[in-house]
Image 1 (tube, one colour):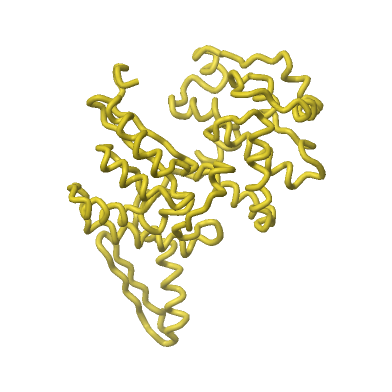
Image 2: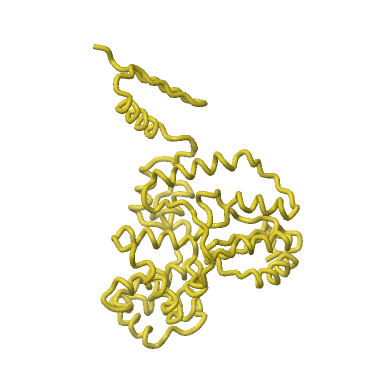
Length: 329
């Protein structure tokens, strides 16, 4: 990969956060040496509580870029915090070009969002060192999705059951690597096994296709008894002789529209019509980090209710000013 044309950098990703410090100490210098002059990045989730120490080994090995998150969003299934790693970089005697004056405002912004957005937006908390993630290897991004799916169905208390089921499913499916899309196959099947009346009573199409080798050669064969259950699924016969369609770009344009943008075309190919329509109908993403106007109006309304006989209120900040006066008479 280091010799491929057009490659700007190489990233090492440890989504489950299972790279151990001892292994990082030998692996990272070797990878860095193999990269030649190409920048090398590392992205590790702090699931086991080891990612911060792994990052220190990465820095000492000469890795160019480490992926971090603002402190309120960091740690646990997320990356180590920017604040902690900046301090570690300085203690190690290295330099950086970050504007440290921006760390606190960014952190305050995301802290406000976490505290006001409701369930599912908890502040990041460092994990104690634990061995369980080495068993289930659940990627950090999937952890939040799994918690939300359980919460949506009032089953938050069953998370531990799902985490215990994941290693079993992974072994039965032939030890697929826990990275997209295979980690989703394992995670969803484990969830269905936990909430179903019996294991593998419900099998998603993607797990059937995976077992049939339609996502590529399997690392190891699927457990024979489990394979029988998968192939007994109602949808299994549909996929036994199925081949993935390979439409041309012109055919896709004819199906989805010749006047839509390339971005919309890709979205419509990869996602359902309802999902794309809902996204487009919601309008552009608000990129202004300041509090939204609706939130300000709501806060002012609450303030007026508490203030009683106050006749006017004025709120101003750079680029915006609001003044409300109580009608007389």
